[in-house]
Length: 504
Image 1 (cartoon, rainbow, N blue to C red):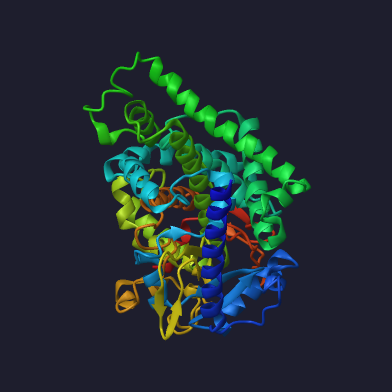
Image 2 (cartoon, rainbow, N blue to C red):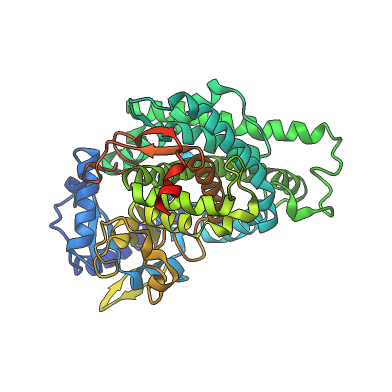
């Protein structure tokens, strides 16, 4: 007993002494006035919209970096591209923050988005085998098929004077696509999918609210709240959906008597869809467990569906606002597809859509999917003249970085020409990071670009997009992904092709 108490005291004193060191160095940094116990928590309380605008204002007022306190927990924040590059590429800042791990583990398990560096390295190398160029090309026909099905669903909205939230349609397409491509499973149960959408929205919202109201972070307090019960019910729905997908794929493999498709690793090993490859690997590799398989598959489904749908919604809303840009995208599409307007896009057409890609990049500059990246330091680092001690969480604001007046001229203006090769010369490599940056960047980046281009090409060849919204009305949630409050409200009409003739 004495030995146990002694070990406990040593660990406590070690932690407390390091906390005092962290407190000393962080307190020397500039930042907003903090109060005992609550720190700067008042800045993120109140309405969701107010919280985000207050936080983003801090990044602008205290550039290049500042400190803030989430209760007793210090956070160093920056949107300076030099510092961002150091944080996203440095060997002492590869770990995700304790808070992200603590809350995120209840949503995505110990998957690569939050796992500690050794496990992240191991599992990322495995999952990358499901996103090779050859495999991505094999997904293209699925992308196209689901895009055409999306058009069938949208046709009921043609010429409707009442606007609708395009995200609702894109999220369904995105989920169907991620299941059919990376998972190799068609999800046809509409009731299960509807429950899954609702559960994801609930969990992401509740996770952010829990971090904002920091007294709910300890589980022994949070477990008494109504939110905890709702969170658990939603997570049960999410996990059941992912487990059903995995089980469906395993049963499919068994139906082939374990031949060729799932267990012959010597045959076309790296051209298998992701889930098929993971099932194969898990059966023969003790370093990749059943729990790993479930966590990583669950992450791919959640992240792949949510991020793609959000990014596509932003692009289409911007095209609806800026009709001249929409027309230029369509003109490029017209030139690529030729005079046969009924021809669907093919895989070789995608690299030719260069202006479309510029529009996508500009939309993701102003509407980044994730507003923040948070890392925890495992050793001291120097930012400018200041020492940032180990144990501190460092937050990067992607939105503040993408709207920095020192980097982007007239940063709030929507201008795809920023991304011409000529205008991109000399730009800092970490001035634009819509998919994060460094070794822990988004593993599905190329998948997202392919899918988004395929969907946009299919939709824009059939519809014109309109909106009554004004850019001054755009307000965002303080959330895991940067979503528009009120949704992405648009109207659609049949695509008219005669404007090209009139313009010549």
